[in-house]
Image 1 (tube, rainbow, N blue to C red):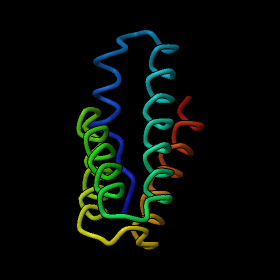
Image 2 (image 1 turned 180 degrees about the vertical axis):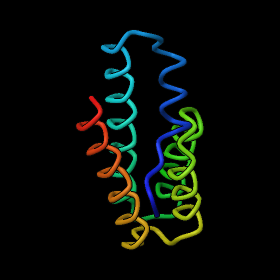
Image 3 (image 1 turned 135 degrees about the vertical axis):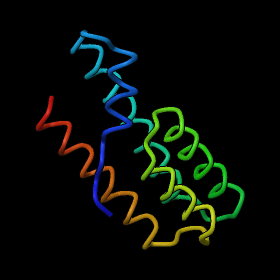
Amino acid sequence: MAYESGALDATLAAAAGDDSALMAELRGAFVESAERQLDLLSRARCDGNWHVAAMRLKGLAASFHAEELMVLADEALEAAPGEPTVLSRIDMHLAKFSAGNALSG
């Protein structure tokens, strides 16, 4: 899955305007929140905890218009708790996003 940041970048830019420090802070908050949900997913052993973490990840992605992350969160919702391929795909997506932030920040 290729990383595209267009809609996410547009959402952040709309919120931050010309304030580059605020833009960096919003990006950081997005990544931190997504990583927290990924951690909760990776530790979930029951359907309920898995579902809650996946829904929170999907909600975060939706609020920032991160469409690819929404798709991955939907995949998590359909998977069994602890599904390693889903966790790996989310982790790789967040790593690409973080690497893109380091290059653009």
